[in-house]
Length: 478
Image 1 (cartoon, one colour):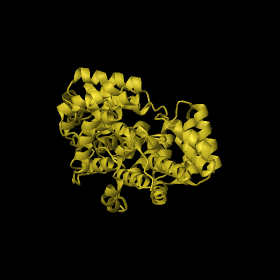
Image 2 (cartoon, rainbow, N blue to C red):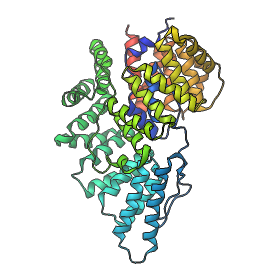
Image 3 (tube, rainbow, N blue to C red):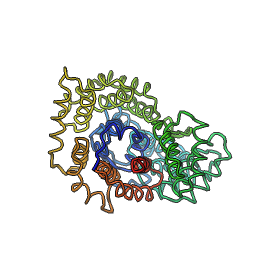
Image 4 (cartoon, rainbow, N blue to C red):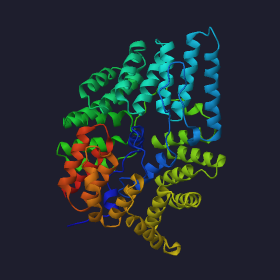
């Protein structure tokens, strides 16, 4: 039975940062997972390096109350900002005779700051309080829908976005968000109606084509999918993330050569429709927290130079920010600056010796660099062996352990540990993907393809199962 090494797997696609962020927005708050070579891990590192818990309101706020949030996970300046804005709302509520629209604006602004900090459920509460007082303001409905989508509350997201569209039918970014929510719910007909309508709006033509392409791919209408994804790349050549979708469509249509061409050209840059109500959220925050958010947005868009500059700015303000060191290392590694990336990961390990993310990234990077003078291989392998012998069942640690078993040629040992988790009805996508990687590594292409087809059928808009499935089919065709 043939085993494939990391370089062969890396020859095709690494999952996108945009997909990682969507996974995180669905509350999959995990440590490194699903790694086939360095690409997946470093992408994930850029969005989950902060190990602090995501603690929000312990109760639902009434229209006259403010949600409770734990500010321990944000830096001092942002915590003070949250307290200041909350105080402004409380003072308005204490004053008699204040116009409802004024109070609505105060609640909405507080919600925007919470939203920027990714306190999504607390932001939802504030937006709802704003809507209670200003039900005809489309911006609050739009932001409520976006926060609900990030929080995984898709029913609420659909209702809010539809209402925003009723109030502001020309704000096409709302329609784009609504179409994406329907895709995430596998409501293909509803999504099709929205994206078809968006085809008439030049500014949103690429987003509409991308949405219709995803629908066609889910329905196995491969010629139509090829047409739509080709149109996306013609309109926005830098959106190289869509090469994987186009490659999948060619593979489904039986053109293996074109599939390989596009899979090999896949990058990390996607589409980001202009949204004047949402785009400025990171700019609301003070201190390095806002800089980190801007850096992650740049990373997500594939603008690695901008991301590196922003992460470096964050470290100028807070030199001991472990998340910034790990994120910067991820961006540096993506641009081929491995030595600098290793330096930042080593600093992260000094600051947080038990940080699994930093330790694993560092081991893989040193293993890949392979500098004998710096004892890279020996130390990296020693670290990976320690991970592989770990019997921890904690989610973040567990996924690193099974990934280590695979990347060190012991995928068979990982399969028993993964099988029960990956086949459970509540299985998380990271565990399913890692199970598929181990099946590929042991040559069980049929089982891997069946697993990934099922995952893609359940959530056709997610790129990770689809991308891995395309790679499985390509290997199986050899």
